[in-house]
Length: 468
Image (cartoon, rainbow, N blue to C red; front, side, top):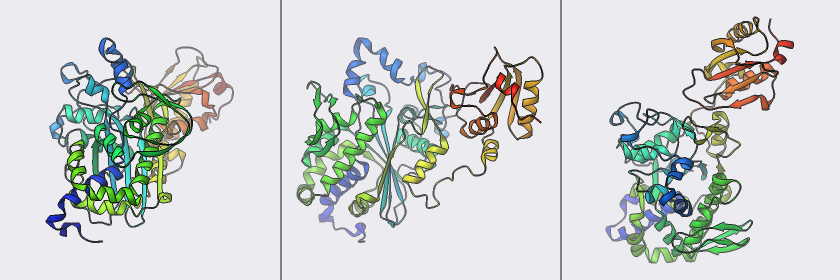
């Protein structure tokens, strides 16, 4: 492959356009700003509904302990704004983000990310992967207490951590998925719309009629089912709508559909030639709509590489209801609690590990339970005797971290497990040990709970147990 650093000065404008194209095609022209209709609906006199439904983070002057940093933000260390030069052979991973239109409309001091898509390319194997991350995924944000993952960008900008919102968002996704991230890109919706118009729209197969709401003064409309070419504003509206039963999960799938439609358009010879011939004007028009740490030279190499990855070698997925449990945060917001092993299994299906990612938790079910080290409270809901103490001793002998024993608040006919902090290995082990059904497991997320898991012993365990 030719070294782009040897390009002549006379080619800089065309090279600049290729930088733009690389970011758009790799980063997908992913929808950046979301839901104008949602912004209109929940603004103005009903502005408090934004907080109620979407959980706008609290500015520093009004912040609660739950949202405040747990350490000095300026002491945090993240990936440098400009990574070292790419060698052309290592796997490249990029986090694509779009910011929340509601925050802009409400004149918030900082913005949450509304779209997060992780893209990866293996230049040696000529493979790629794309994984959509839901904005409501509960995550540990470095330097802050747990929050929805979309708050990482907000806190990074608001508290002026090194590298700002992009750096903190990258660090949060890295910690959540165990994937090292090289680059980020934030794309604004005007550039998204304009670029799609420049390539002649995108061809989409729409499975069923869907209601969309274009930005601006244009009224909502319903797109008919079937294959059609959408201009930029309708493609944006299609990809950001949540009007289908699957909500954000469906929206993520539509965003990926639009990404591949853009890719297909870019690979059409006529489009590529037209973009090349108009490189200077395209670059000048759209460059202000992209914020990225992707270096100019690396973008050139990636632009070439992107054309060499066949469609069948691009894996794609959405972190959806199969990989999370639904819960409620301490401040009453609907959240998605990750099931770590399922998500990492999905990650390894989409992104070949190549030794770079953190491994799945090793060992058998009992060893995994021990490694998770969830604190457990055993509560007797079936007798006034020694059932609770005997069960606690039994669990301790198996290596469980039992920290409390007592009586349940009322009698239980069936043993019930309440998971407060997301402990899939411990819960799986206990379910098998106690022989309970799925409807006896309660996900009641509360990071302030004194224990991670509560076991309410029922009459079923009293009458049939494996105690020695």
